[in-house]
Length: 131
Image (tube, rainbow, N blue to C red):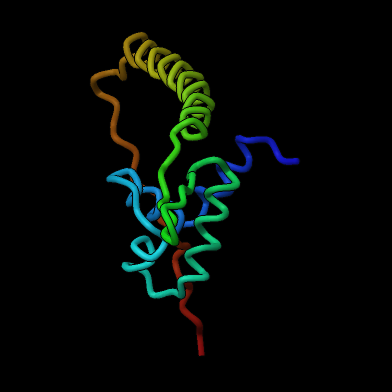
């Protein structure tokens, strides 16, 4: 069995499933209502909803013959929490790099009469061929 985080990210990897979640964020909908904006069959949308349901991102309630889908936030909170740890890590590293680069710029200003180096060509000069 896959872990919940991997299942969540696998479900979110598809743009159709992300669009379905975005629609459900505005309120519950039937599978038929979810299918309306897509150029795909009802069974294809049902498969996408099933993937979201297995990931715990969507729940279905039966009301007679209609099945209403509802977004579930718990797996999204877990994914957000996991991403937040990495965001804090990289922000700290980038802040350290910024401080170091600022220190280098402040510690070693260029001499006032230093000429600006000429730009280097991106392609070597072409040699003319002799007849």
